[in-house]
Image 1 (cartoon, rainbow, N blue to C red):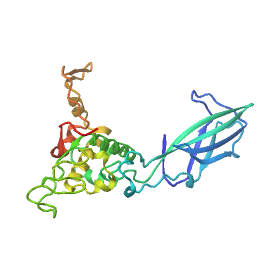
Image 2 (cartoon, one colour):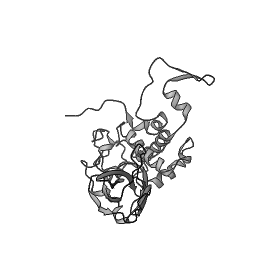
Image 3 (cartoon, rainbow, N blue to C red):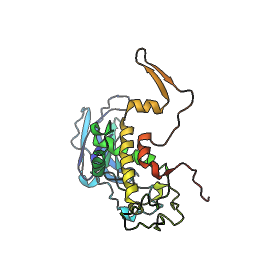
Image 4 (cartoon, rainbow, N blue to C red):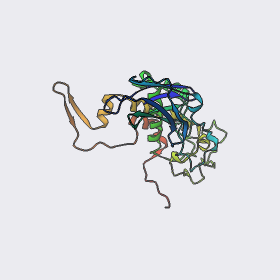
Length: 293
């Protein structure tokens, strides 16, 4: 699927073929455009430039119909954090007049902003911040040779995986150091997200936080998450094949005749790679979450 920058005109050349490659010979062609929810963006419009016998048609969709909705992170509440996407999809339907029948062909394309990463919503940092973070990580393998779209998708997936970990003690002096005005010797700092009982009120589940709430978390913790996110994104894109094989339980590999040997015991499966976990290890607990139903 093609991806275009939100707010720009889109030009498409669409083959007049079915999914098996069979060519149609229509005498007239019209089109309309809808978004991912089925809302009409362009009503049915004849393609006057269509030439009978042509193998394809070209259409131009105005910029006004290619604007992905702007998200204001400050307006999102806890019940909405899973509802938002920074990307949108447009579906173009072609209506072909073939003999006395109407044949419908569809094609889709995606729209995204310059930076589809929103801090606290689908990422722990913006894309520019991720590039800066990557400069502090010497072990990256695939990040620096990957395309921006690959990085976008990997960053969003990396954040999702990191949110599967259970975080705790966010109010301890591990986070609020003596150089911070919030430091107190007793090590208990009351905030909307860290109570005096040393428990994270969302039970360690970062995916429940709104972007505004995420912004209140300790700087040291957010820095660790940023580092872990880039490392995990690198792992998702490609990462170190040898490390991946070891994590999957491989204990020996013979290149000639391609023989691989694995442990009999299944390797421990974690939501994130070991390399990413190292950056957030001091904030993670593996105790089971307990809550009221």
